[in-house]
Amino acid sequence: MSEIVCVSPVDGREVARRPAASASEIEAALASARRAQKEWRQVPLAERKAALLRFLDAMKSMKDEIVPEMALQMGRPVRYGGEFGPFEERIRYMVDIADEALAPVVPKPMDGFRRYIAREPAGIVFVVAPWNYPYITTINTVAPALLAGNAVILKHAQQTILVGDRFQMAADKAGLPAGLFQHLVLDHDAAARILSTGSVDHVNFTGSVAGGRAISKACGGTFTSMGLELGGKDPAYVRPDANFDATVANLVDGAFYNAGQCCCGIERVYVHESLYDRFVEAFVAQTGDYTLGNPLDEATTLGPMAATRFADVVRAQTAEAVAKGARAWIDPARFAASREGTPYLLPQVLTDVDHSMTVMRDESFGPVVGIMKVKDDAEAVAMMNDSPYGLTASIWTSDTDAAERLGRDIETGTVFMNRCDYVDPGLAWTGVKDTGRGASMSVIGFEMLTRPKSYHLRSI
Image 1 (spheres, rainbow, N blue to C red):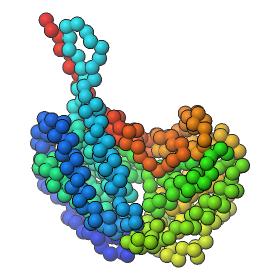
Image 2 (cartoon, one colour):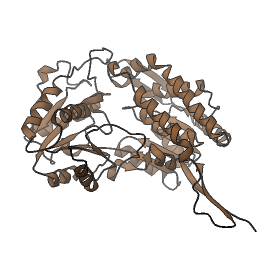
Image 3 (cartoon, rainbow, N blue to C red):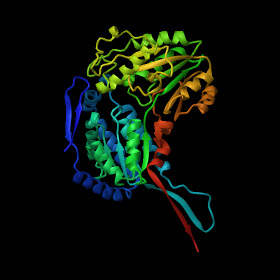
């Protein structure tokens, strides 16, 4: 039997070791989920909403244990308090809109007929969750899935396996019916078998493009619906009329928060030539203010990456860029905790970069950002679109009309103006190109987890 082992990036200690679920355990879990879902879909929506709010309260009651536990698993500094703010915001928003989002769609009346489209739950929703934002990425699907009347099977990432346990504890404490929500410890082969046999009705996956392709291949021929949020290389464009100080501060944070391990973190910045030199100087100065170290220390503002292999990808991209003529602005001597062969990696700012370099083309998912000079809006849009990815793009300007105009030409799932690295639960979280398919959050998120059922009732 395979085992799932979480090794801490903080100091290399083993945080958790769990046996992967056996074939018989998986079969029993799926059967109990199917039974529970048939009953849960009959529960009034008001009661489902109340159960989700009890789940929220149960999770919040564990905050003191969760925050340091998460730092040990994936390295985010405890000073940031975990993910409880957006976690609560997303649950409460989806609860608040559930009545409207799940209400029948009623077309124009016709004499002698009752016609409407009901929203039926998909059935069993399989959530394959990532480690970088292990609570909020998971709840993006779990909350609307349960509200819509589905059962949920959760496979959490190896690096944050204890997060799955916390979800199960909260579900149990909230009094969810047995079998309705289940966290299963699964290896990749077992997850693929669940999908290939058509045992679930919808799968949501957040992770790499390669992982998304594996999910899609496993589902082949089953007609299981999919929601995929995959890679990203999110750009920012700084126009001449940008609020300079706010723009620099927000983009530094957008590039380096969570050690750059953010799905919609800023990985490349295009700056109008009139601001370029001043912008680089200010950006580099603020990057130097980070404190890299043990995430369990309240003074730490930048923790280690989740694993050495992830840090090595960023190191390789940076080295290749420098070899091709890029300038690295941050002196390694400023960040003594950054060491080769460890997950501890300094934040780096690169200029004199171009799109022949992997750091400007491939996903980095770490604390490095390239900054390029552009002459106008047209060049900025062309550079932003020169990517196989499209999750978010941010425009920094005082001209809302210009942001909307440029946004129409940017190939992306979300257009930001004067903000970045944020998920608004009122808007669809989606991507284009290799970033994925489907959407979560908002009314549209409910549509992904339900199926339409038409009623055409004639009176004679």
